[in-house]
Image (tube, rainbow, N blue to C red):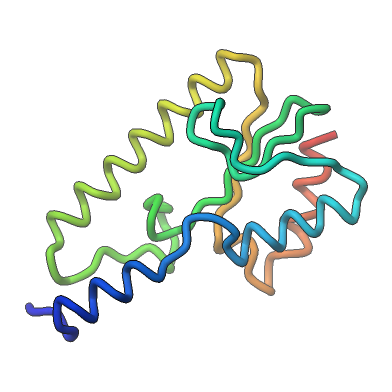
Length: 137
């Protein structure tokens, strides 16, 4: 199966995908700030450059895109029909890196919370954010 876009258009589309300040990240940051939590963003001296760092609570929050991090049993994680093997390898590497970074953070004494993009959809968001607040405290 061939791609429906030209290589130039595909390249442009992929370059427009953000890895910082995504909509799910902003939702979580606004929620935490409204609850009085003070946070740091993308601390480069920590493994995996966590999306959110709550130093006072020694807590790290990663907000993972379901596709890019291979969220199992999620309807938003579908391997593309073109270049399937390449995508499996790419996402597999992301998962290995995630596990390694989480392990390093936990060994350093951090509590690590993973939120998935699908948990921040309108149907689940209130429950997800409520649970997040409880996990932090």
